[in-house]
Amino acid sequence: MITMKDIANKYDKTAPFYNKRYREIQEDKYKKMIDFPVKGKILDIGCGTGLLYDFLKYENYTGMDISLEMLKKGGFAKKILGDCEFLPFKSCVFDFVFSFTVLQNLPSYKMISEAYRVLKNGGIFVLTTLKKTYKEDLINALRIFKMIDKKECGEDIGFILKKAF
Image (cartoon, rainbow, N blue to C red; front, side, top):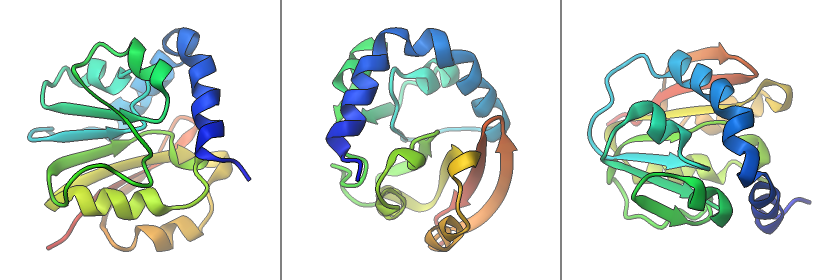
């Protein structure tokens, strides 16, 4: 079974070339998934080098990742080294939570309930995962949210979800 330490080591090794290899792919996903105004407090779970920050150009952004080397490459101020299955935030503090191409690396869907916990009521959660690893049981895990949209975005399948009152 893959551990969070294994995941961190994998991404620490890819940090030096991550942006060059993945920037265009990730930006295509952002364009397809974020077709609405973004305001308020943002959390980017699995932010890596901060490509979403570069795309949004939005200052009220907090990036969290398990890879210290990836975080070191990011040009944003609020960086948190941490495990997305145990988010180090109070409940109901973010207006938007984003997680692009992270879920397939995790041993469980616990990140989904953690995203729900830290979102404000009415907040939006944008989640993508690789199509090749997508399983229908993910839909059950997402039922705590109201489904706004489901769409394909490159190699991923994406979900736009709302924390209903």
